Length: 450
Ligand SMILES: [Zn+2]
Image (cartoon, rainbow, N blue to C red; front, side, top):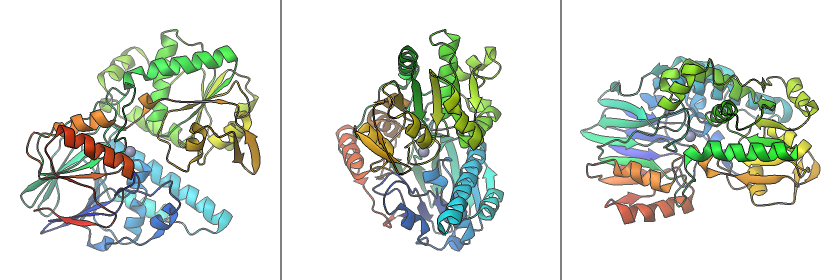
């Protein structure tokens, strides 16, 4: 049996692994590359395997770096079925449709060739087959899988795979234990081979349970200053967690009822999907739902779907909270709000997610004094604050604890989905805690699983 790494090998994005067993070819995740200079070229390049030869595909979760090239795989001839949890299927559909729209706009504006089109997304969506957590299923000749809750975003999964008499475990993205709404990651006790993410190797977050406290602090500060609280946010999970935290704070009378704008059409649609799957929520959220009709319905929450509605946010006087994408401030509506409010010392930019090198979010965190937005030079007078408590990813101690959950001897552990430095740090930390042979695969590398 052979395993090939066609993405997220020495970097965070582009997850894509091909497992060739004696009887079938199965692909795990098919994500887009993001952030790096050459990411567009890598996304447009042909697959290094023939999509027509793939029998089945498993999707761990709906983030773009796991699903972003799936419609392209289908366009290029993949004819099998795509297995994922029901929430992942619905969220992945939104994410793929959203990226098809963005690419078609770029095609109209700049003549850029899109990676795929809306019709490819529609074809991909037809191939989805739902499997719930813990429903062991045969997906190809001689290949069975079981999805377990990875606690990363709604519906996210780690994948147990049985093939050729061996058991392989793909971590997917492991969540941050204690995060609201979703359950904590489930540990798997047995595996011969493990493929594990390493996003936050070398890092320890503040506890996720403190999210609410940190949010309380920045809201209070913004109210005291009569300023604008800008929260650049990823559309899936983070936005819903922020709304949930705000709802709890308001209910506990810790913050005043100030206007909150959810200024992201994708986040609004994703929130609708969340409402459909209450059985996937953790106990805290379920019990909160017992006495609240709908925890997304903040009294002063405004959902701004159209561009006109988004522009009107400026006319509401501070204090106010604006949650908008994109999460790393590389595009989306947050950039318009930054142009409006970055030069005001009363503004707080609250960073709640991973900021890759080279992104505007990273530069602001690094303390740049001016930024270029839409051809204008804007002075940065706003306060920029970041909290790792809001991360959707496990930190290093949590990754090690998840790996230690495997009680059987691991023949080989492959570290993926991390920048080289984070991956090296995690390798060292694992070496201190466990007896296991560790591999750090390169892009395009194939390994034999005996
Ligand atoms: Zn993810």
